[in-house]
Image (cartoon, protein in one colour):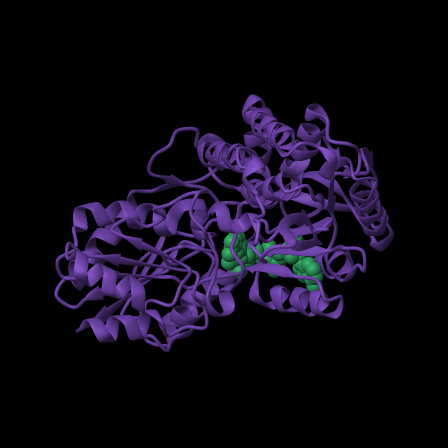
Length: 480
Ligand code: NAD
């Protein structure tokens, strides 16, 4: 790992006006490297570069299929460099190396998927009777600002950048302070495939400084934010001041409803991935399991077995997909999660397993299962963002739905049952943007993703996301 990483503005690697931030390896607690920190002037330079590229018309003049080819080539660049990128991501974020490799593949998939659709962003012709010819076009907003969280820094940047470029926007990405380094690859990829300088800018800076400056910048035309509710509100407020649209992908407290006829052998796999992937630092994590009282004890027992089966330790040593988990992203995040577990115990919840900091260096929390959780407890209401699953009981379907819908969030939800009628009914009643039936995380880059309630608005992924990056222009022609 090199000892200093710069920002990428207008086609050049540059230092930051604020200096540098230390980046740590959360698996060891040791300093890993340093990264440039942007100030307001750096943000302005990046936005002006993007504005210049947009105004030049070079991106919109391209035939979309050509633009799409370049987007797809960026995805291939990621795959060609997968080992180097995954290693950087693993070291700065703490996830197992194989999960980091999976994230690189996931990031590449966004470029493949959206690049493939560049020529499908079509307008339509609207009949106005004799004497008129009317058509619509979907034009890029211009400068797209994209603010990224630390949990999946590659996939989150790829998700917005690929759709932004596909539709002909110039992009300014604010990378997360804790995990900024792996994003280097998007600059290298942009250069390698031939985007003009200024079409892709990447800068790391403090959220309250560079992030705030970017979201309030008058020359930003559209904002995509992925992160916490608190920051989302600040960004939506800034966007409103400039009357620009924003997409908010915020947190979640997502629930799986497990009915009495659920296939619990299969559900073990959902526990494994739903709450212990990325050490639970997943916005759509299965952080609540609401299980029919007749199957409660069995679910808790199976969850405990899954949690105990995981080998927890240094991400870089966990090279093979399997029963293992890395560290959390920082001691502060780990301590916050452990604190929420302790608070839950004080409120009457019981630890079925885990819940404690591990007695080794690094930001490790034991894979945790809490039961005897009631819906009003903090741990059942607020996002833990760690490997902590809360199990609750229900007696009838109406109660299950009430508990599932009883938080401020609404990102995803799940129903586990063999009864298709029941599954469909529940899917319609759960207030969330994505519902998984009999497999947590079913879906992919092709399926629209986004929140109800305080989980945000707008959709990323799927065809729907493309419309966030364009605005419709109608052209009505009076014929002679
Ligand atoms: P965060 O809100 O603290 O930070 C996210 C980004 O916003 C960072 O780049 C940060 O520097 C920046 N930021 C902070 N303050 C800002 C401000 N005032 N103005 C502009 N930018 C600012 O979130 P986090 O802790 O990095 O990420 C965890 C959160 O992200 C969780 O709540 C999680 O659920 C959510 N998340 C959501 C999704 C989704 O798709 N819905 C995906 C991943 C993470």
